[in-house]
Length: 211
Image (cartoon, rainbow, N blue to C red; front, side, top):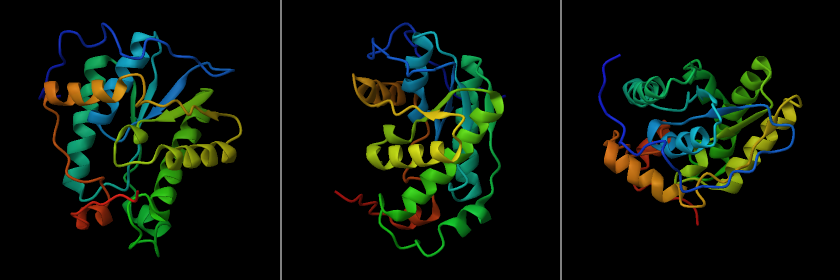
């Protein structure tokens, strides 16, 4: 794999989130990741606390294909550097488009996003079940463009469909993690993404989230 970035010397040596309470029945976690920038501080936190997640890149919403490949490959390089098992889901763009049909003109944080989040987190829950892992969580709500209550709604809905696993609704922005995220993104020099990922957010260049 071609190396395109290096991690800072202090990476993994600490985390702003010094206390991390594990949910009841926890035996491991699948971390759904949307990109490397949103994953880095979360992964640092988990690894600092001696938790080695199974990491999952399932984002068929990302458009076009070259954008998808940029985000996936940068994320894979991060996982390789951290020696984490990385699973890449299918890029089933047509299936994703069918699921959000009729919601094309919804605003960011609208009904289309709920469907999108639920679809991606359901796949994450199914992977956790297949691997015998008790919990799953996601980096989706680390972005300022996303609503954590909306992401959590999708996570709990996915878990309800796969009762063998549980959604871990940890807030991966609090306790200094959002500041650490932006510090790491700036220091590492990750690819500067200009939109959420889907074709609809791409054409909405104003990218105005609902308040």
